[in-house]
Image (cartoon, rainbow, N blue to C red; front, top):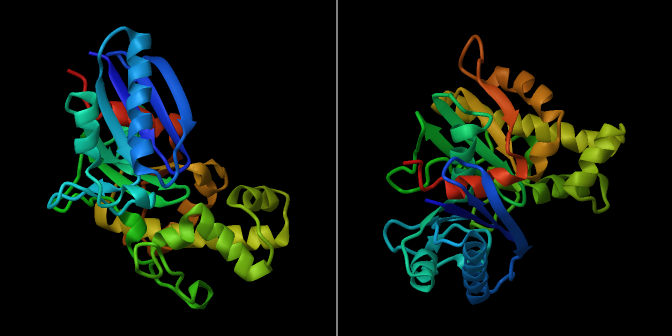
Length: 300
């Protein structure tokens, strides 16, 4: 049966339709109705209807979101797109679409995609990380997505940054109500905040990366600090999970030097005499999350 994946992001909603063998058949991207829950639901329903008109058949639908479903209440929680929080998104979409859907955290979708036929294909343990507007993680073990007893497996972005020192303080406040979360340092806005605090001015993460590539001292300083923080945070993942590969997705995953610099830095924090874990970009790039949403319905 055909599969449709929907990636619900803070600024865009993307849909992809996949054939049973994984071939991409149709793709569409539209702006997210920001802060508008009902508008978001309507947009997803319209996209699915448009895709199915194109396909000429009904499809199985999977949706990736920047949050998760509470096992206790069935509503969305922990979403940095805050209009989704405390809303029964899965139930509302199922009512509008007239069928069961599958819904998962966007980082879990990235992990499913990259473990299935991406950078982590064939690996026993794949940890996938989104480094973008927010920071999240997902874990696939032997081809199976691990969700956990509390449905928060892989929620690495809201753990405290390990070993904070003088250059990491004061701890930045996080939208989740805590301070010093990994997300506050390693998201795109976190990198931009570091630059503003240290060097003044307002540069986006992409501009800081470009400046570092051109040897701008301020940009290089902030990016090197970002790399040290990322190495410490990922070392904790390696010590706990010992994955074969860590796959990076999201906008900051496009910074090529991360794949050279960070593994050299994490060695000092990993409890082993040798670190075999690989660090790699998502093979499917920006399309990986939406493909993973489709693969929430596994191959028959």
